[in-house]
Image (cartoon, rainbow, N blue to C red):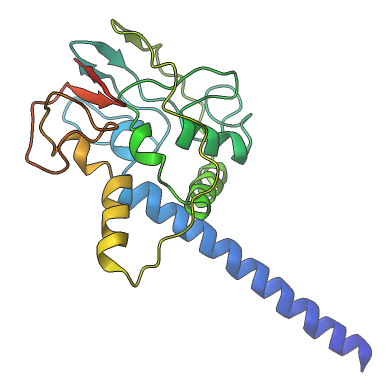
Length: 216
């Protein structure tokens, strides 16, 4: 009787843990694929713009008058991707814009928009990226004509989840994670923490807003 009872308890615990893991992975997949659309930049493409290799294994050059940036490999390959990074280090890179060796991530990585990502969502993204099949694909080094930002602000400490029942606030949160403003926002003098005039209409590509600094 006791043996059967313990077996049932362990089965329930196992199912619960498994369901929680699936929820985290599912949330991470949703944020990476649908909201942030990381694969648009971080996946190989051919000359027609179609995907030519495994998703998130490193993208083609992003061109600007100020830089030629190659989006890196986000799969957990040990040599060319994030295989040696912990989930905590991925979260730090995502929200603080700093790599494990202390380098500051540069444009067009939309770090100012990711700084508001909640702890749970950042964890979900990191968990999902670490779950991907490792793909060995090294991209070329990026080149910049502008200086690297010293930082994007103080380290992000704690960000709570927004209640999804507040559809306006939660929608604004998702729009920020989707960095819609990076394309759909005009430039103006006097930058406002990387957002410029939020969603006030489009602007030419190849110019980016980083913190209070205009690039390009």
